[in-house]
Amino acid sequence: MRRNRKVKILATIGPASSSEEMLRKLFEAGADVFRINMSHTDHELMRTLVGRIRSVEAAVGRPIGILADLQGPKLRVGKFANVKEALTVGQTFTLDDNPEPGTSKRVYLPHPEILSSVEAGHRLLIDDGKLELKAVKSDGKSITCTVVAGTGISDKKGVSLPDTDLPVGALTEKDRADLDAVLAASVDWVALSFVQRPEDLAEARKIARGRALIMAKIEKPQAVARLPEIIELSDALMVARGDLGVEMPLEAVPGIQKQITRAARRAGKPVVIATQMLESMITAPVPTRAEVSDVSIAVFEGADAIMLSAESAAGAYPVEAVAMMNRIATKVETDPTYAGIINAQRSEPEATGADAISLAAREIAETLKLSAIITYTASGTTGLRAARERPQVPIVALSPIVNTARRLSLLWGTHCVVSEDAIDLDDMVDRACRIALDEGFGKPGDRVIITAGVPLRTPGSTNMLRIAYVGSETH
Image (tube, rainbow, N blue to C red):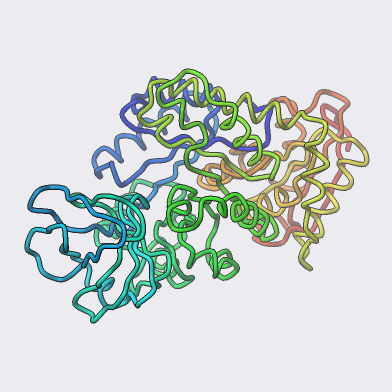
């Protein structure tokens, strides 16, 4: 089964979509990668879900990627004597280290790292920004604030700190346990929440040791400020617009989305656009016009993947949401303006053999109107560089390693096939042409372009281009 679009669809699974039957329906509707949210999934359920996805994968005969999304630190206020309290703009309100139940004047904040880090003038956003406080003074044990906006506060509401660089890593004890569990279950991608600085990625990379690729969720202003360094240390990025929209002005988020997407494309790292893309489809069978426009903008921008959260995890119309996203993406990619927009954002290749070969493959394929670019890739790097070029023709990535094919299922324009390694150059060309025919990327007499490294089985040696005829005995 081949997709007739280049952008990929990432569907979160949850109560509405966790059965094997429903996972199969979501795949058939267009889902390429499944996301397991570890905030709501214990280890036993996670292993069950991975097993079900692998069963669907075996049934459909296509590699399917799995992304495990780690929860990250959850910063929350304590409880109140009356569960909730009314506040007025301009009043003083204190967060402190006293574990007594809160009142209309103060509340316990069980996070000493916040108490010691917040400075006068910093903003504290409570309950997804519904309450805004401004620190007046802080002594390490309490933060005295003025209420800037909002009228109330209640038990265990989340705290966001857009102005404060917290001295905490992105991995909590729960995250470390979850990371060990998802690596043991052989997930393909791990999404890291609460990334503030490049160093936050180092611990996860050290634990993963290449067993899964690391996706940095960009959801904090501190991460936006250090984006180039974070891109360098991550394997992919997620534009987590929900938290970005809390910690930064809402009107700034669309521009930041474009900045992150373009920076990731320049670096050749996959980028996922997430949160509220078809939010109304949690309860309605069709989206709003604004949501359709939102999805289309991400596709026009050349994002690698667009993501559904609650729409597919807990909504009333999970299959319809995936199908709608598939229809929007397919329509956008056939729009007469699409190719021009994608081409206008293309970056210069880096001075490497792989980039030079990828650029040449795209230009030859487009000039000669070839049917596909077929790339042999063991590690996945050649596939990444080919996708960075955003060619008009499909990319078929052949890999003898199933884990590589699953990881590349997130990648723009890339159709992944698990194939035995070629014996020699002639076998490689024959195999590529046969797969192009079998997978529907060419008919007898069509031409494809093949990239690979010679000698074979030498990682990072992409140095060969070959034009071949599909269905022909001579090349």
